[in-house]
Image (tube, rainbow, N blue to C red; front, top):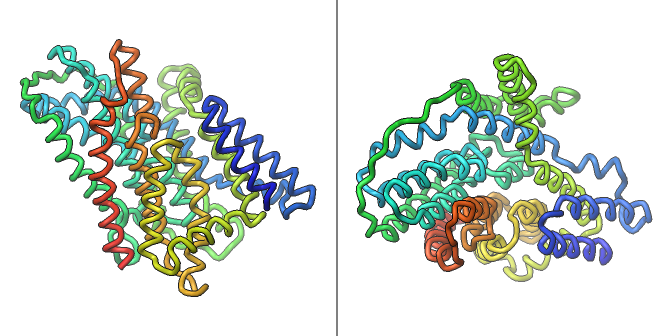
Length: 439
């Protein structure tokens, strides 16, 4: 156990210290776990390691990235944002509208992609009205990061939870006769909207915007809607008894996303009579995240086999005793604090099996429903990333765009928006989830 724990801790230290090589750190740690397994320190071989990888999650993430690339190229997001701008009277409501728009899009599209879609509109508005876009773009970034937890396809962390807990698309909205995490996130979004209104209360300059962006292709938009519709439909497919059908059933979400992505790519290549669309999709693919997750799945299987996950679960259990409210609170608070400084993807991937083990210890070993803890983890880890400029990829991307446009972004600039935004959203989500799932 000690050797596996040391490798695990070193993996996190190295990923924090050398973020540019995080995938290679994770893959190196996975290899180290395999070596320990073959040395007989714990039971693990190449077959069990490869079986521990959630290929459904990886295919789903990669395929969604491809469809989003086509969606952005179609210029539909820019047109939607411009239409939205024609409906608002001044800068204050423009910020609120753009933030809410980014949030809605981010519930179905990767957070970074959402920022890349919406930020250019904010920059154009700020140039026309001659004011700094810093605060507006920070508000857009934190709003997109918030809504990533709302649906199964909104963020990598949501996809991880869905795959691990076998939750389908609809169960993020309604599960076991109770409202799902979607409604807790939306309640947080509503509360944070009032925060944005208050912070931008003095921005009363009138907004004038024309619908100028021409959509080049409507088909990627159909693919985006089709992805959501088919994921919903796939969630109603009954589980087969076994064999090949069961394997396909367990991969259904990834296969849906893959099929629509391939349809979009093939059609785009036929339209252009060249393989360039495929090249662009492949070039925009976030291989680092995919490799990072591949390696982490194996690392987590290693620490599970070595008994580390059960040990961590025991520590949480000792902290809260047999009190689910204390444990739930500890998970949410720890997730918010840690996700403010570390990437929430490896954190959530690590904590999911810990929480599963923790729930099994409850009630004197009889076990308890883990969903309240799963939702608490996702709420804290996803929303907590808004607490600092480095807590989420969307924040880092937004700040990078601002700096490329000659804007200076200080930590105080971010904290002024990020802290009240995060606190209001987390508190609402925290209370909502406990009231419906914990009591």
